[in-house]
Amino acid sequence: MKIPFVKAPVIGNEEKYLLDSFRSRYHGGGGNYTKKCHQFMQEKFGIKKTLMTTSCTDALEMSAFLIDAQLGDEFIVPSYTFSSTANAFASKGMMPVFCDIRNDTLNIDENKIENLITSKTKAIIPIHYAGIPAEMDKINEIAKKYSLTVIEDAAQAVNSKYNGRYAGSLSDLGAFSFHATKSYSSGEGGALTMNDSKYFERSEFLWEKGTDRSLVVQGLKNKYSWVDYGSSFLPSDLLSALLYAQFENLELMQEKRKKLHDAYVKALRPLESYGLRMLSIPENVETNYHAFWILFKNENQRDKFLNLSLSKGVSPYIGYMSLHSSVMGKKLGGDNYDLPITDYVSSSIARLPFYLMNDEEIEYTCVNLFESARAALDI
Image (cartoon, rainbow, N blue to C red; front, side, top):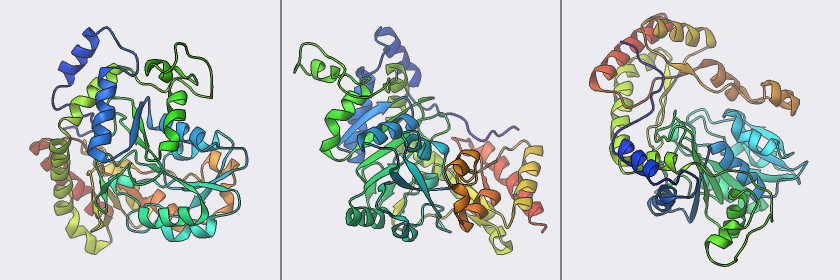
């Protein structure tokens, strides 16, 4: 049996809605299924305004425009994240200030943020790693104290909750991902979430390639013109049709992912007494079960585990390579940072295959990953 790291989900009316969208002869952005996705996310997740985008990266880039990112501005971001979290802002001339992560959730350490704030700080960009939201109450409290904007990188946390509220609704701005590797997928895609009305009008201009076409659509003008920066951030309505079919099965898909999560916990728990660490869910979080990670004592153990698993046809993968030690990160001052937890996690973490597996796949995967981890731990 071959178990890939990820497999894009298909569970309901994807083909039906794709065909409906195709036959509509409207394949551009902003169509019927795009509007359905907007309405669903706003009503389900308690978000004030949502715009579908071609990627989470685009949603973050729109956020950079919305906060008027300027050359020399600083933003605080965990070094343990995907490049887009930093690149969307650094590409506008902002300088990343890298923060270490917590030892438990692997999210940004909220207790280390305040010491990183300077007169140039403009925003805090936490991520919700593996579908577990960061400690947003403390982060928002710090941001309010220093008049900073908080932008959630909620790429992995669609349908996750923190203290009873959904990811994407926890701060000023946020970004979702619907990439093929995510829990709910349109192949490529994302969404910008906004919870402050001051961003609403300008976001439409950015979304429409820097024009005020949205005012024409609303009947407020009879012609549009170039009024702002922007880009072609709208996804095809075909992609929104694919995503909407999965929104209809949101809870069912999450139940299936929970089944795999619980199977991993049961299979690997006996190895905790030998030093293996694995994902755990804080009491104030309801996760979407996006991913499952394990941590070894060192890189050698992790790499042995990966190789043994691959030899059995099971494909776990590494986590993020730390941004501060990357080629681009070093160009932006990464060598100035001492982030011990980030460095340890980057070298010792393994993410396990995670998708809508059937029972046979779950059993095969758990048995073989357990054996590979036990051998890597030299038990």
